[in-house]
Amino acid sequence: MVQISTSSSLRLLLFFSSFFLHSITGLSNDAPSSKNDGGDGSSKTSSGGTGTKVTIVCIAVAAVVLFSFFLFKLWQKKKREEQYARLLKLFEEDDELEVELGLRD
Image (cartoon, rainbow, N blue to C red; front, side, top):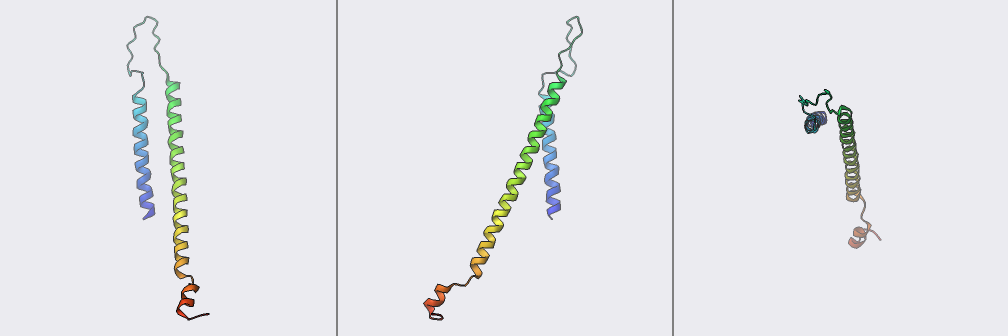
């Protein structure tokens, strides 16, 4: 069961990250077919800048995923400790109740 939910959430994350990266590269100022007839034939492209942006976005997405995973594990640990404390409290001997009922001195 855990394997299925992890796999589907990973696929969903990959889908959204690829969509996000596609939209980032689609927003660049470079036209697919530049028709600059300036005479010298040079076109202004910044493929290095786009590659850097994509790399930064990928690193940021990875950092957010790792941070979310860390927070989730921390939350699980906290919930587990709370449940264990409630279980111990449920099964501990209540001496005050026994003294009030006169079962012990």
